[in-house]
Length: 352
Image 1: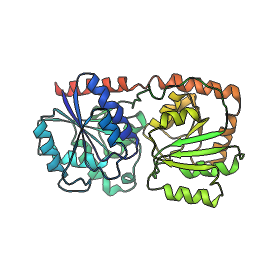
Image 2: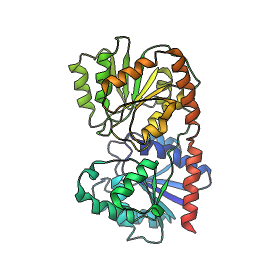
Image 3: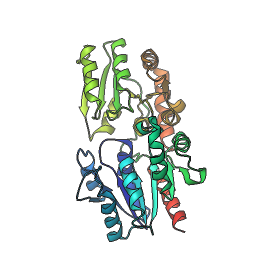
Image 4: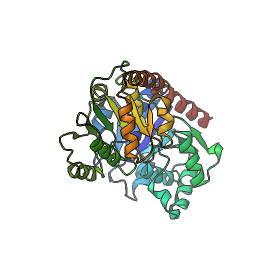
């Protein structure tokens, strides 16, 4: 079986991190798997993909907005005889849905990675999204909440959509249940409107000065977050590390992982923290809350006082150790090998 994954870019995000683990896992299960990146400007993961032996295609235009993308996709599919084409993120989804009408004798799959996006705030995009998603043989949603919201927006039938949860390559992240040693908080997340970094920063103002906070990631809302830190005089307690290749070790060294999101399809960063043995406090939004559940603590979205209360709760050593153990146990149900097998089974079914 020959598979081509197509993604908009390799910036820091859940879909990009998923494919970094998923493609090698699919290769181990006997498939020939390659990746097409439409726009490599601003990439963060390119070298990591190459280190894992993943063959990467790029387009001549190297622009996610270019009208030439469907033709470029058509040529790459045809020249390499791919049987399965699997698109991720909106620009890849749009251009691949158009390319399908140029190259028909291929199975087209797409994955929806979030419960919400800005297009769904304007009804004018509803017709566009209906066209895009109906162009695919199968649409995969990464959680029940993601599937429900997508079907509500596009009118897709239940038969068209299948839920396959994300997975994590656990080896690098797996830690042991631990006792609390300090007051270091960490949030691993891109700076994007879907994330709520400001609530975490405002919580720092209400916590004792023993607490420190580290942000891993970058993106469009980072400058606003940095301004908030300056306004609240927190520069000596909050640091921005940007993109990092040392996330597993940083998580293991931290005392509490925060995942504050306005909306979330799944919560891959929370799952990685859970695997590391670091207790997780997450905003109570669908997708993310389903992953964390009782193995962590949930706070009301945007509620600074509730977040502070949950952080202080983990000063209880017994509760802290219980959540550390529970997170590790829960993370084991989300292995990348299991996710890869479910994808492969779906591909085989569609090829019949």
